[in-house]
Image (tube, rainbow, N blue to C red):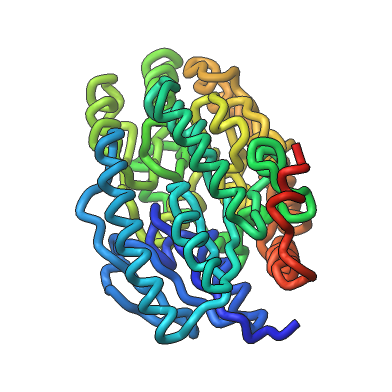
Length: 408
């Protein structure tokens, strides 16, 4: 097929190029000959309303709210949807597009995708988050809005010509709940880029005068389990009497200030550095200095089925990991990680200390993780799968709704 096709990527939860998966996909498509445009919100370090990077045109809009409750999300998503629809027309009449590539959350971009399909455009759904499970994880209940999330997810799958899943768990949901034909669902993992994640010498200043550093990178949100990690810090410092361990937590989010306050309340604030969202250089310095990296994601249906980028980033830097025992987390890390009992802060603490006190095991686990990334998980292994998904858009006639409905 001709590689002169034009792609419009829609993303709402992070700005580009900060969203690493989206940016890697955009660069891979551009390298394959596609003309790529991105619509996304502004954010720290990505303040301009328009930017062209390496031929990729990025159009940004301002979101006045960062939601934390159900009402806030409704306002945020409504504003994002309106801006995205308006900017899509701008791109259509300037650069043009043949494909809308929509990344969730939210599961509302199908409204835009379905509309432009009436004008002959293709629609690709890039499934980043399980929104029904995410709703339950955030709010601790199901009910009306959970059922609504399931409906929106279903309509998104039904509108998509092709769906991209981040792992096999997501693929099963696309085929099961979404009733997509298996040959229209492609697994493209969020493999790390070893060009970006460089192994560098440690910066001993980040240990704040202590012997060991435990590193974390990720969002500071309710389902990320930072409260479990801070309780594990308390067990390590006060329970085990280990004043020789410092913790470096990199990332921003709606719960950042709440987690800082919790560290004070637990009496461990002096042992924890919260950096907030920082440039790659500062993030890499923290992780390269860390003796052990940790993933405290809460064990729930959402996290059990989701692949966390941080796990593969730790592995790319050759770091041993401690995390709760989650299905996809274990699949990604394998022997690069120790697995604590689910949602057990005391066992998380014990596993961290166990690794800190065993340098030979740390080295062995870190080497295994690095090799696994190099040989299997690095983004260069995923690029052909992304391009195969796009090739499927142009092979033969579009699958009819009746044929899709036959898949149960």
